[in-house]
Length: 159
Image 1 (cartoon, rainbow, N blue to C red):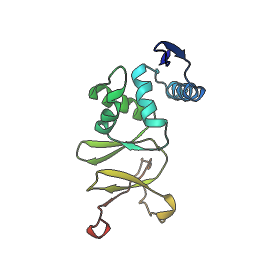
Image 2 (spheres, rainbow, N blue to C red):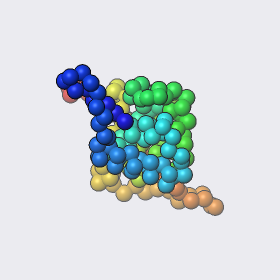
Image 3 (cartoon, one colour):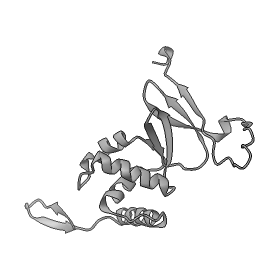
């Protein structure tokens, strides 16, 4: 139970808001539906990842955001959770530079702009991409997805 100080200096219990309970219940259900146990750390990371719409994160960015979580979450735990969420279909991994990966909460088919001088990713709206002529898959294989990353940087005229 959360407590709130009154003007007299005493503390009184404050019930969590119904919206907060609804969000927590939805996140718990999302994890369970994906076959993941909703531990405190997974719930804290799920709140950062999924509570405010689609987003792109790296493990390092998520680690920086999670520093206020209780209990604290180690970078190793964040990597493990991101891999588990990806394996469960909750995230899409986007490999950009060597071993560095981004994680996207929008798992549907779409493409990205990578803003190199800001190290950020933006979704490319589907209507901006013309019909891509993909080659047929090799014999005995099927195409499961296609990734397109358009690398951009802010021009000096835009600054």
